[in-house]
Image (cartoon, rainbow, N blue to C red; front, side, top):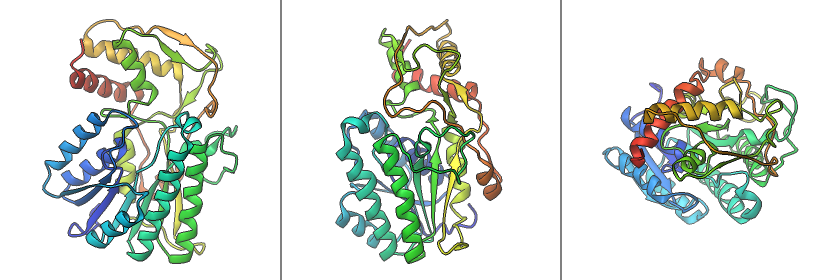
Length: 341
């Protein structure tokens, strides 16, 4: 990060979101000027977003705007005012299953919103645009680990289709307007202050509510779902290392895509067992979740598994936090934050 000028601002969209908050907070602690944008929508608990925002607002080098990136005039105004040198676009409508019943939200935020960010970067040139893609672009690909050069033209959810569209849009703008753009394919990010709509968070909520958890693997332990669970601090470290390394125009467009995953997929049931142990450790008692097994849901994929060779070659880093370490941190935060016993 010593290559970035601390007198210039870094814009983080989705700053009150899970990844956005952790990234912005890291940058603020390191002394960077951060402009945060978030519409604070009610997709999940707004109180959690407000808690994250309160932490960031305690830093004098943080500026916040409650804005929606789908509002082009608002986006253009913020770029004109703050003239960011680096933009990290993490604002998006997340969730695979939610996209099945709420497609409009995904088109507005993930397509129109990202288009507005690209247009702003075109008219107010930046040194580097970093944006969130997703492991979901790999669809139901069978070859593992997933590599950035794999064929990804068969998405199995609208969410995945919007993220693949983002990559195509970014490449086009990079080609036409020489905007250095880096897409990040995140693999199942988890950790403290995470998203309540994510399975691990929901499982923990269900336990304290005295309700069973629903597991969508047909109860097939031998052919269980595999996920490349990636701890939030590893995600942030990868982003921070990439920020001062905008791609070069090697093939006519300064555009690249990287996987950020743990490169060590775990069975879903192993993850759940580790979560039970972590919650039990935080509570100082044995914890067992009541389980109900159901069929795989539309849009879900059997396995996610990242090759991180390209990321390691670029920045000398690969995610390293084990699920035991990561879930221990999450469980302790959850117990403390919600005051549960």
